Image (tube, rainbow, N blue to C red):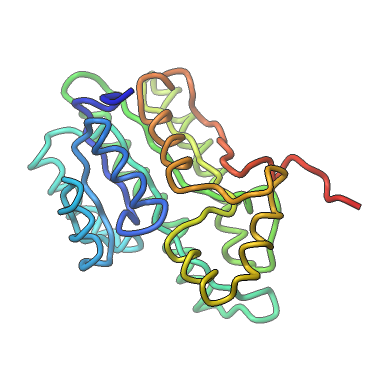
Length: 255
């Protein structure tokens, strides 16, 4: 069913590749005007041109970049209906390896960047011409529930849950229809993971065994969840965590 996001204006961060790119392409097909925000200008511009989105440069950890993005969206669209806080990085450093510099860089992108995005979105959505309404979607991870040794990444994704709930209840208590939810992907077959599998084929088997469904998720499956949460069909959903991970966090490890 196309057209589920007709007349809506969306911003997707980290939209130049991976899950974010999948969301951008799906949102455009569903009728949204999409601003693809990313610090990768070459890939972001290419994806935007290919699918009919508008590229805006953004380093999510920089408050001034969010102000610039707000100005672009306000000038070009006069409203904001959807924000997907999707940008994120990993460090691959455990508690014995992580440095303060690495920790702060990751938190600046994965958590502070999301906070700044939520802050901008709530401000803009409260000023929407029709009503104070909109949907904020924060990309978390299955590691919000089950830890991995990457201590900064795991901590940041657990933090996304608290951020999401706090924003959701604040907006609800204000009497607005601004909703905030998180999506929790598991192992997802992105372009980057495909390239890694080509270099080390054994990765595929390990990733597929992570879920009871015995396969990895697809970018399109995660994007489908984002479309639902962005649409009016999810009008009574706020403060929730939506897992797209094939049951990974539901099954006790096998003997």
